[in-house]
Image (cartoon, rainbow, N blue to C red):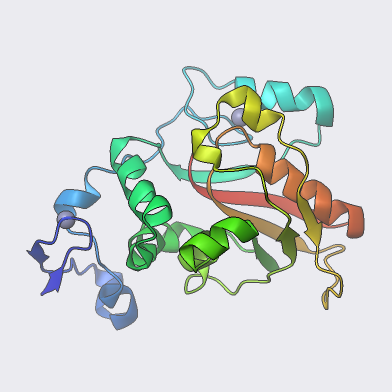
Length: 229
Ligand SMILES: [Zn+2]
Ligand SMILES: [Zn+2]
């Protein structure tokens, strides 16, 4: 019996044939079936570039906008869930109220699909220094640290306030704040890199992160992964 991290109800973790052999996966379940049902996987058709839900199979308006600056060098982003009210509530409790234990719920939501996306380096987008100070933990690393091996390569100067309070235009106008750490001990050239963030909203932060890496490792093959789109 386990207690659901989201609603507090006791539940019996579901056991699939695969999980019978994996005590670790079974033990990682911390969301009850009822709460799990409130999260909605992105449904086809989706944008072939960024995974946004669409009414047709063309590329989405965000990607069309990025095409103006990046041509055919668009960033392939894998995403799993729709950003609905349940997700919003979970993210607010995790990020705004700093409930660190909720990282386990987010990890459960993405662990299995993420394990299928192979990369040489998994690079988390860093939390800004002012948020780190406020929450005492890095929100993106918190989610992914037990899911895939992380290479913390990026730093950010931050200083732009909370993204959640910004409108589209303000997000898109945000200046570059990422750079690669001074003494990067790895060479990303010719390797597959998967950038990790929690939510893809406009794509601005992920494109900035990619720009920062390509400035140092121009031959890196970069894609990205977010839980929500
Ligand atoms: Zn629950
Ligand atoms: Zn798109």
